[in-house]
Length: 550
Image (cartoon, rainbow, N blue to C red; front, side, top):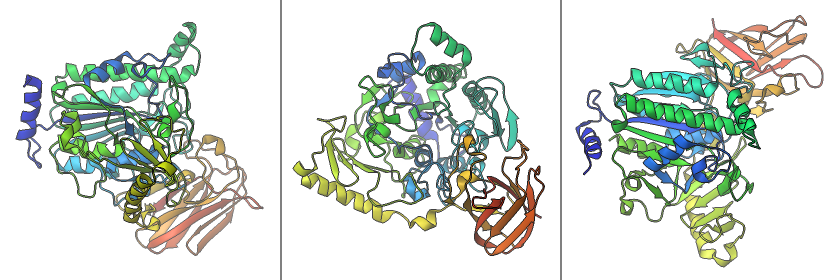
């Protein structure tokens, strides 16, 4: 037995579930955003060079048939809960259905109870009002941007990948330089500060989500080298690669590598973008939208390529298993530890993976569903593909394999029957809680009506409703704005209206007003909240509402 593996096993044996002194393994999880499986040189990209990722791949167990929900928020919900995204009410990335329900237990919740420090750096995208923020969901150290991408409507106004404004433990924090560099700087500072206790460091980068603005000097370098294509995207990936190398070197320098599990993955498949065989836009439930890279380096584990079926839903139980912590019985995932340690016989031989992403406010049975086995893919309950013979999913063989279709449909039926009622999983914003005296609501979270998300939606007609819960009886101030406070721009409207339940407020305002303020006496309970700015056929809803209990 090699000495590194013996040291790792010894720490696991010495660790007890509630001990904060015995060292259990650290976990560093690097998750890129919207990066295709093929956007790295070790996976055949002709133009992107990723020497650090390539080196890491050779040190890791690489899963080549690994799948995730095909959108940001559902994938992250699965990562943090180990459960199907629809159990958490996460159906899409906007429209009030990107918020992970507060009754879900998260991985950092569990790790904290077992002596871990927990930190997140970068993208969250699972709710930014109380009680859905990272700090409410188990993270001690929080350094994030808002929204689903840098510069989206919910993000700090005017944000970009250069000199990005982040939110550090609730404080607005400007930075200098490129966003990915800043995030890794902060994450490495965190790792160094927590080196004497177990830690979970989640580096969730906003790249390669659009906009594809890479470091300007690197873009210029690629251009001068005659590289053609989306140079901003290519530069983002190569800069990410450099930072992954920096993190690995930092762990080495701190003497932490022999007791740290390092994982690198992307959150969704991006339709085989950059693949040698070309892109493949078949649709949400097909493999190209769900196929992601996944590398895990465990001290002492022999590097290998694993071709068994696995998915992002397995991250949660895998981390807990390696940390010596019992996995909750309601987890939908399966620990990959047997595969990582070369004990494939202990992994389910008939593994079935279900992924369904409604990409809307409501789910329909079978819609956008994929039931996967090592060989088969059942799409929307009707089409069947033999992945071994037809990896690009071009030939529907359902009519020739009716028994396989029947068996996979039975598996899906059991999954569908286990899901909670959709109405119960709608996440409400809690208003008036002592833990968070002021709450900011944003139009990206309208659960009915319009569904704005981009900064380009400022000034466009549209309205919608927030689902809110008033925690306590009392008087509340509602500050309604079209732009966020930091922009402080005129709304250019002369009338404002608000309705919460059957309570209505209405007023005329000056044309240069930046906000309209209402004070309302409210009873505790669940309500719809809606606002109107202006009169006429298409008054706009306030895109930002700040609520304070007086």
